[in-house]
Length: 492
Image 1 (spheres, rainbow, N blue to C red):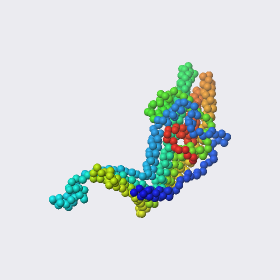
Image 2: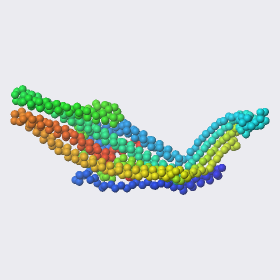
Image 3: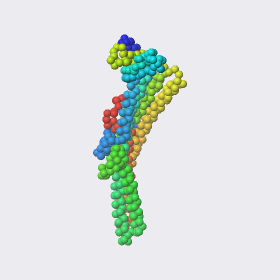
Image 4: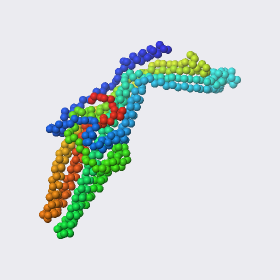
């Protein structure tokens, strides 16, 4: 028996060592990437694209705290981590057939054979022992079996399945990174917008107070016969118009605070007290952190996820192709069987069997070939998705660069407009109080100032949120939170 087992194992090992892996071997496709960004200013010296902790460049401790807390408590991140554990377990399932399977079973049976069924006479002269009993007495049978089977992965179907599962596992790492990247952008954008709404509320309340002062002055002049009732009506209308904008800004402010609470895995109103104190709109370095277009292949988690999904789809072609070939297995069984417990472990109770088996699908109505065609089509889709993801990433960065640079120029022009409008309000007020100008000039100057200040606050908010969008488009920050779920280092 031992010599026979050794020979069988040698044959199996020889087959395994000579085995191949059917299907295409994966190679990362070559994609043409521009050498520089077309929208990056020629005269500008871009800052290097720093993929880690870009939000700290805004110099706002509250923002830093929100980002850190969100990375730990956000529910979407927790879901992505659970998907990593799922993919890791699926890889274990895919790799299990590479090892022999062993099953143990045991049984005890007590039986009595019918004399009539066995053909015995009524006087019991004919024995039924051959049917499991002795002299019409119950029979005990004790059994213990170990069954083993091992399919030799001769053509690599199982190894291709493991390869696909490994690529899917790595894709889940990058899906986790993509969720983190989106979270970082959402937290920073909502926080900056919240500070922007606070700034606009301050502007609206300040202008409302100034307009109420002007209304009081106009009423006093009207009572003194120096102004008309029309001037009073215009001043009242201006006060009410400005006051009507405050509730809308309050709503937008509360919406941003509620969103931040949910992003941190808390109730919507949990951060209202914490965020209530007014702080300036966060401002970061004015340089463009663009880096090189080729950096996206390493920094963008959605690109790396798409590349791993392509690798998985390629391996699945090999899994399907392996079904065209025969499958070789080594099957064995060993155990003990006895009618008495006293001799259960004796030499005579042993039983065993071992031998190879082969199965080969001869005709399945074209199912295997069609499955291979399906896998090829899925691999082509994954390749096109990978290329599309890269093009979309390039577009995101180009759009973010032009939005940031143009909004920054607009903000500078609005700052100059605010200064000019403030001077116009001061002059119009002086001339009106001296009776040298119509009150309509005061109203127009105040309205223009309020609009310019509001536009400037919105523009300053947009400059910072556009910078956040640029960092997000570059794929920065998701790898700043190692949690044991980081993928292995790969060179794109």
